[in-house]
Length: 426
Image (cartoon, rainbow, N blue to C red; front, side):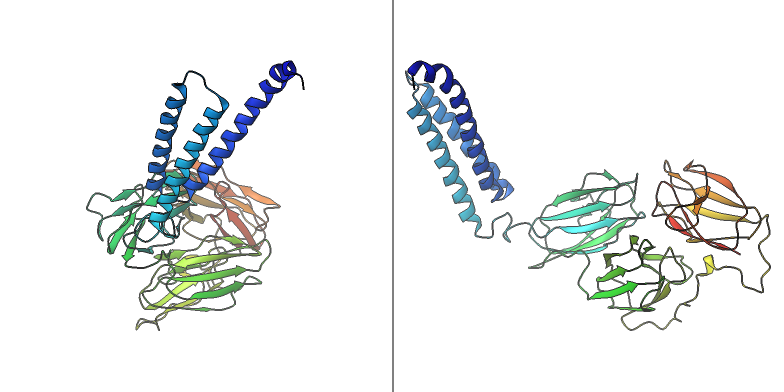
């Protein structure tokens, strides 16, 4: 190759490309070192390497002539410092890598926020080690976070306050190490969303699982059992298998069949599909469970062998019970009251008279959030029979419902499809 060709054509292209390849390779290799060590060790290593680059560059630049051999020596020196510093950091932290006294952050704990409630309310973490909490905010348009307090109440200044996120969204919190003990946590925006964190010596991170995993299934609009047995005062897991194609089901646990107190509300899952519900610890007793979309799917939750109080009835809940044959049929001037609060309706069943116009009065108690009621022939939403105007909370509206034939239909909020239920027309 001619010298002029090399100097004027090859080198102007080859040198920048070669330098770029070397830089990329060096950055990639250095990133592997930093990712293998803890946050603090990575910071110290990066600062040491930066100092080595400055010193080596100053030495090379101080020479009368800068040759390729000088640049190669600079790259080799910096690479050696990076490898040496990273190796020392990894060796000092042990084979397990990571930070903290226990050899690295514990496995991340997943906490789901839905319907203005935490699904996981009893967490267990290893004491003396930093850990991660993955907050899954499933409330559309609603802000949540997690803040941890130094004790079992919320009177003191939080030890940790996570960034607020608007649902649906997910965020990972890096929580500092906690001493052994019990800590309370809540949501800054919704202080009624609470839970506890138990920091134990040598423990692993748990998002609600100390008890056994219960297997349940739904098929042909029916649960495969009408009794769920759970251990007392121990968080447990229900693995729910929805086998009804295209149909939504969930499992919700209430104190009794009046539905006045919600103990756990599982997210809806469309079949065929599976979901793991993390059930918080419950005191010994008997409770009521059902599918919120199909209230006829219900049963009893027996915790720790039951309690002395009378068991809940297994029929349809009082607040959603349709008129019996002996009761007079609903008249055309009857207004159904439906409230929306916490991004959920207060009922999963609306009863309307057959063959005549009727009304539904919707009260939206969610400030700044829009809701409505739409009625369709079924959950596929293939044919909409009625769609009400959206109302922004706090506000209310009365819908004029056209005559419907006797049967069972489906209703939901068009903005929040998880807010849904059945319309029974008699």
